[in-house]
Length: 330
Image 1 (cartoon, rainbow, N blue to C red):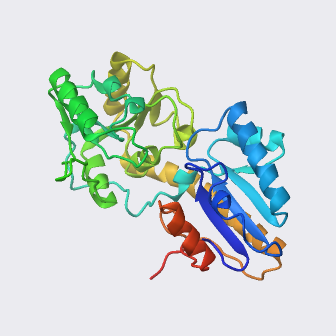
Image 2: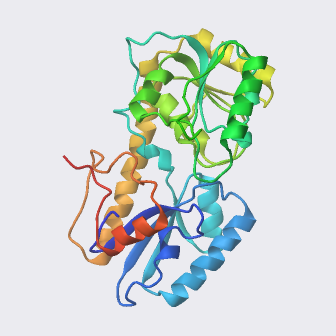
């Protein structure tokens, strides 16, 4: 929740076509509400946009005082939504990655050629890293059920046989689930590597990509759809074909360039700050439209990241109770 009066929420779309709006269609009809909705997965296709458009039209017929604004992770997504008749702006959700948590650490020695922060799911394509001599992996399991203890352990065992120089950092708990590292621990491990890698063909915007950059790591990526390219730059990233040899060659090339980490971080922050400013302008425009005198300003007043991953019933309860939880608190 960004505001209770006026009602402004910011949510993802995981499992629902309209995010929190799909779960909250019964606000009083006289109650104006603005729902900022951010795709969790790529919607850069006509089929997804058509589905979203249908649900949005039906939602507004039942709730004429609800405004739906889609915060797209790519300009192409925003263009498709606008062409369909929906309000959409470019706002890549990874712009809310904390630059205070993810940063270069001068006292951490570089031990690995590359590191990959990704769940152990087939679509993350870990096998594309097999050509890299020394590679580390930070991993986790999400709630989608795309992997199990058995598939994760099998994938790790097979990978270690093929690439003895690769290290899987996380441990498993007593239930067989990977122990998810705290963000500061993730940052420490990122600093142990020379390059960050992104290997999926399609997903959402991929927070790990921006985390690499804020930690000062150059990035090797494959051609992809979803939004992770937004903060990449030819000066400190390479796009390689999706085969192990090409990935390894790109990692070696970026490592050899010895690009200063402070430079990568500063260039990324310029782009991040630009997008954060646009987000604040959007929220202020909603305040103005609602008749509220309230305004917000930089420096960034929101939590990192703004959205918290919550079960729907908890998110709904918080919103209905008027719990504003998006801002940094002392």
